[in-house]
Image (cartoon, rainbow, N blue to C red; front, side, top):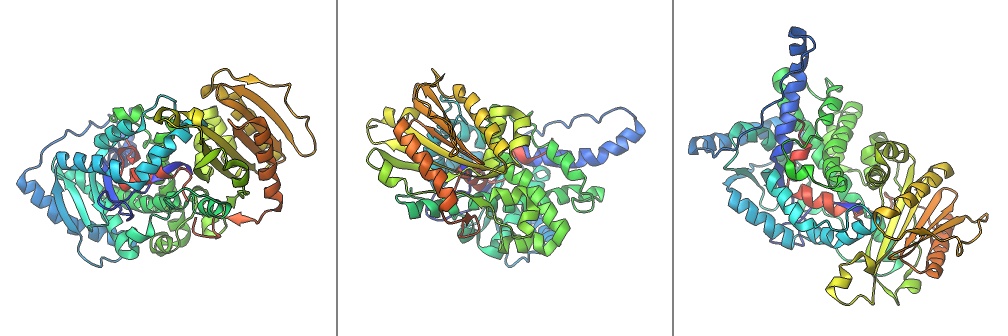
Length: 533
């Protein structure tokens, strides 16, 4: 995916897919507040018609006493028992527990950001996201993400050490709902060994066409698996929070939409409130869409299928998460084919990044480019997407390499109809001004339209942008010279008609545009943003 969801690895061993799950307080407090406010709202409105209940007051940060610490430690056994009964996942052994300090957590976050493989991929991919127009050119990822994580921290489970970490500055009553979420991850780990299960993304850049298509086949796996893990943990979290009201997400499925609508509030999260849409949307995806996925499978197939079944046969793409009935029927996600572009490009470009533009990526891109209406229109019309970015070999200095001017980008998207393809091409062209200056339509060099398709050329301060349409396909070339852009368009568009038909289920699927974002962030634990307010 373009927006890489961070699955993450332990800072002490960057080659192990350690699930260092840092629960974010905003998410937990917000969801918990919403669970009770939704249930209480009907009662209050009966007593006082027309009056909404008062907004919950934000929780004050406290430093727990030794007695409270002992209470919190004792609660772990009770909470994991609830999670086991809720999921049907057995408790195979006791979960270790420890209390940690803010200083220790912030030290851990800094080390993780410097050593984690997903964090490194995320930072490398930052320039590609800017090239796509999904991040502003002046956005500085690392300091922003560190500030966000420090704002959101609430507790975490580490599958490498098999330990749940609790925070000494959060009172027990606030931590318990978060703990039941994190202890669900402990049960998942005991069922399926998250160290081996979760990080399926190749860490190196592909160098030939076989590696290209292998990376593409594995692109969204980590995103989908993260959504499965978080969706299950969120289901347990919500049912624990709703228990005093006698309600649950299966008995009262209509509650889910009300709760999800409250997840987007950032009233008590000023750093997240400033986050680019790309970050906030990809951050919420595993919680909101993962929870919807889990609820549907649970209601359609039962508890065993929704928990152990999903862990044993996880979804492999954001498309399956967004469309859970497709997952239930074992349908396979659309996958476009990458032709062999290396003979054409290797003398001038070093392979920099490759991935799918999955249905989640497309939804975010359409929302950024065209707003909510465009996202609603184009997301269901999506039928596959892939991208490749190369860095000019002529870029020698750090300043040159860190500039979007050093990157050439190609993007092929598939659509369910030619009308959707044309609409997307128009929207994409209209948004070129958000990332380039001096954008001007080039009519003189444009090739005449034919049965093979049509092209539109724009000149920009970073070279030509060529948008080629052929039926249900749209090919975009950015910063390649015109001759190369046309050769690439022919290669990609011809390959979809003659190449091997691929799907996300052919092999274990790699990371797309948002993959490392989702993976790293959620390796840090439950985020505030997932909590409803």
